[in-house]
Image 1: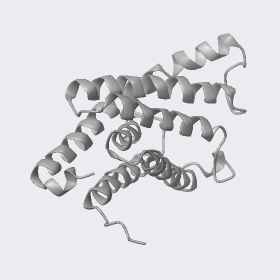
Image 2: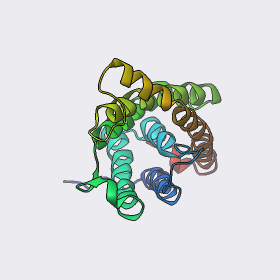
Image 3: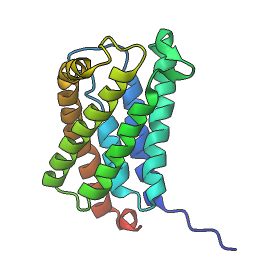
Image 4: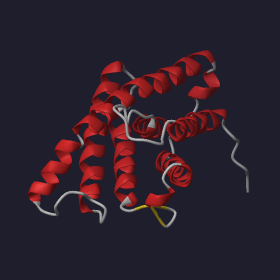
Length: 191
């Protein structure tokens, strides 16, 4: 039995994902005009686009999300936790997994156009899935009918816009930094 050689690419990709999780924790804490401007969507797109083992493209962004959620709930919102996380957390994780899928299908080649398209798809996907979950949750301030669902979606439009901007800003930083590193260090281009 042979041991597979450890690839530097894997550790660099993982470092980008972990850095996004750390940044997420440090910018959490209150709802402001820039809430949802975070690296979460970009992290999921990045994982989806770059990990050659598809299971890694899901596991590492979702694990980073989980660990950062644990810290955020413990540090900033202990009163909102129901168990280790929050009510309806699985909707957000489904949204993140869907964003990874967007990264896999849309960003086959890194370009500004593909990043913009993927960022829009990621923001809309997250908005539809996570806010459906918020509407369905027991802590929702919206009625559990079609009118309440529409009110929830409309109220969340600014958060979707902020996520789109975060996807663009953090995505450009992550993707183009890694592309630059690949050009400078060819070992990172190896799958």
